[in-house]
Structures are given as structure tokens and as C-alpha cells.
Length: 328
Image (cartoon, rainbow, N blue to C red):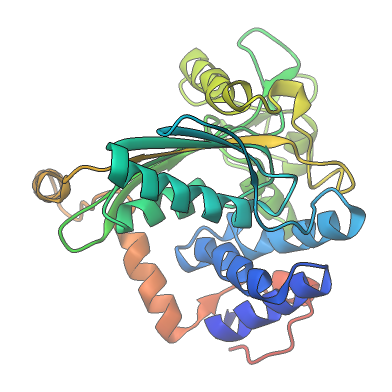
């Protein structure tokens, strides 16, 4: 289904305000949640809002909209998210990273006691579009076993890196440490679709394409042991570095809405003029074959188009949100 972006944003803002978020913050958060949908990352956007609302109502997510400062060394800041909505604490952290990077050349802002913040690229792209290089890391509930192991010990732990070209469009890397993501498997379960081959193992360690069995089992890391090592070090750079949750400390905000998610984030901003070099790299990539595009840039075009022509959202998600506006 297609809906008007502003109409759905306002509806979502009303739901968040009804769950206790202040009206201005709810409006901001709703737009940030929908950023993933605008850029075609539907599994990480408004489809997650019912879980956020459950957390707000059950107490796992607090209504606090601004994190507190734990430590400040100038180029490195550690914030306590106080279990607030991840999109709001992340917006604050990104703003701080950008301000400080312009002053010191590079800055990192870590957030502990954080909550799910949607797609990691929402935040790296914001930094890139502000004229910086953005690097974003997050840890999550354990869903991957170590190679040779049989119990989940690390999450999908994403990393996103973005830098803009001279037109302001960002080249983006946005990837989980696993082959697939839990959000996309949940989306497959809602849609009655199969999970792609090579994504998941069931609880007995056998590869499966059944989303229900995949959610009961473990995900497979990208590149085998290399992907697991990447996920482990992202846990170090987020949970361990901030003094927050890591490994089994991170709870599932979907399965346990009354428990704090307890994840951690790290936002790194680099103040450097890279647009000309990014232009040159894109030119080389595009010239390397027919119909070749630089990663992530088409999502900027998609976002602009969906603001004009309507935002694509599944009928099931709209039903669960109680959306009664215009659809087509």
C-alpha cells in the first residue's frame, strides 16, 4: 500500500505521544522511524513501531528524550541513554558528534543503556549529509554462535559508514555482521515468506529457510569466522567501551518489552573534505560495467521519490498501527 508520508508520520507521532513521549519529541521520533521506510529499509522502519510502543507501555523503554553525560574528554563522549527511545538518544548523539568533529577533526560519542535505533545508515547518512564522514556501530541481542559453538553469544551487530559526494548524496555501507538480520526474518514471518538460503540455523544447528525456526535458532555470520570476529569487536567498541551492556546483557526488546534493551551505540564523525574523492571513486565504479551504481545512493533518490509519490508500507503494518488515512 502507499500512504502520504506526512499523514503517516503524524499518525505515528500521535501513537508515541499517547504512550507518554512529549508531543515535540514524538513528532521528531516518528520522522526518524520513517526514515528507514523512505529509503526502502522497511524491516527497520515503521514495522518496528508496535514493538517500541509495547516497550513504552510495559516500561522497558522510558519516556525520557535526552541522554545524560557520563564522561567527556572532548573528542570522546559517553552518554547514558537512560533506556529512552533509541531514535531520540541517537539524534542527540549524532548532533554532539558533528559539533565536536568540526572542532577537533574527529569525535566519537558512545551511548549505553540505549534502545533500538532503526537502521544504522539513518545515522551515518545524517552525518554524511552534514558534510562529515559518518561511522556508526551498534550491538544487539545475541543471535549468532561462535564458529563451532552451539549457543548464541553475539548479536547481528551492524556497522554503517557513509560519505557524501559533491551533490550531497551519500555513498553508504550498511551491513549486519550476520548474513541476514532478525528484523528481516521477522518481516518474512509476517509476510509468510521463506528466509533465503545461508541465513540461519535452527535450534539443532541445521540450516533452515523457515523464519519461525530461524528465530528459534541462530543466524550465520558473514564470511564465517571473519563475520563473527567483526561482531565481537563491535561489542567491544559499543557495550564494553561505554560501560554498557554486551553479549548476553543485551535483551530482546521485541520478546521482553518490560525489560530495558540495554544495547549500546558508537557514533564517529570525521571532519574532512572528501567529496571530490568520492566523486572520483563513484565514476570508477559506474564505469566498471553496465547498470552499476555506487552503494546506497539510489536510496537517496528513492526517499525523495517516496516523499512525492507516497510511502510504500505493508497493509499488515498499517492495520497493526490502526492507520485510517488515505491509502492507494
